[in-house]
Length: 116
Image 1 (cartoon, rainbow, N blue to C red):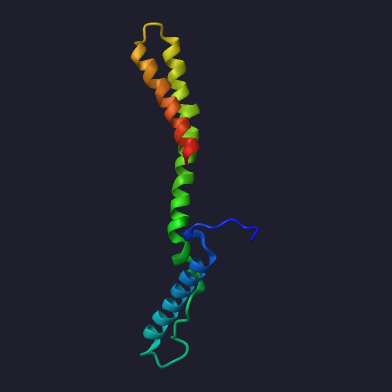
Image 2: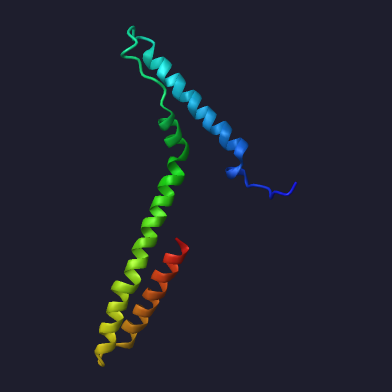
C-alpha cells in the first residue's frame, strides 16, 4: 500500500471499536435507567455527545493543558523574565549569579514553550 503504518493508539479500527463500545455502554446505561420508568416522557435517550466526550476526553484535556502551559511560557519568557534581565542590566552592582540564573530561566521558558 502507499500509506504508512499507523501506530496502535491512532488506528482507525481500534478507535472505531472503542467508540462503539462506549456507545453501547451509553445505550445500556439508558436502558437500565429507563427500566422502571413507565411513561415515554421521562425516559432518557442515549446521548451521542456523552459517548463522544468520553471517547476524546483524555486527549482533549491533555491538549488543553499543553496549550495553556505553552501560552504561559510564551508570556512568561518575554514579559517577566526579560524584564528582570533588563532590570539586572541597569544595576552595575548586581551579582553575576543572578544574571546567570535569569539567562537560564529565559532559556527554560523558551524551551518549555517549544516543547509544549
